[in-house]
Length: 394
Image (cartoon, helix red, strand yellow):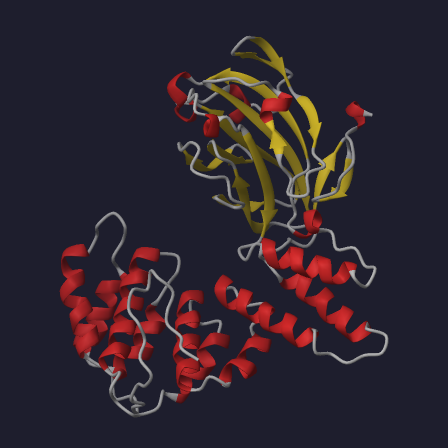
């Protein structure tokens, strides 16, 4: 089976890499790795990055593991430099007939390594021993690296279909577990369909923790699509009773969606407006303080606020509305938290630029549901993804 790294790592990995007993790490190698680790998107250390990259690659096989240990996904620019250096080291050894360092096989399971480094190590290890995938993948079902998790769950689906059980209970249990672990929309649909064949309903909306109940206020003016640069009162005083809007006084209106993927269509609820923005407010209750990601899918310009703090903003229109396209990272406090999503429409008249909509969900860093988290709807605590009507709409 032929394997290579995903585009973005840029360097194909060869079929062999000399295993070497790790000598003492040279000072110049340590400095070169530190230089690459310090590269940022803004350009810091960029002038020195080229020579440092070459020094790491020239160090050969002994530099591979130290380079992978240095990868930190929190800085994707530096991670890319380090991973391409690791790939170049492997490529340079493509004609050697040695074996991989045994430590490489354990890296995909080692939490001390960044998720992208774990993926890199997995690809290298399986290049040498394809059968190793059958050993590693069942242990990677909860991997924080999305590609590894997706591949592991796909492997698990194949295995589940081979389970021999007269009642089908073992197969159903396997599908149920895989559904809980998947973070992929297509896999969730596939597993929900498999469970439905056993008469069991899997709730995709709750699985992805979509916000299904909000209060909307607007429209507000957004001349030339610049509303993201204008701080309207709902951003700082989201509990106010009314505001001065684009066409007069506006108040918060309760809205619920029954869409499986939590979509709110603003053309239907607010109107087919141009140069306008709307705010959606939701309240979630956390049993304890916890890091969280608020992920929004929308073809429009979006800003995300948590408890009055802006987490994210992107002035971009009609470039697709895939799930999780916009991500705001913050920390939920214990108790009630106010989430506000600002969604702006511009004045394009093209037929493909008429959508004005959004979906939002609250999850952990892997895209999974957070324990102890509910949405507060008219004083009731409901699961995220629950489909019921607010009291005001009954």
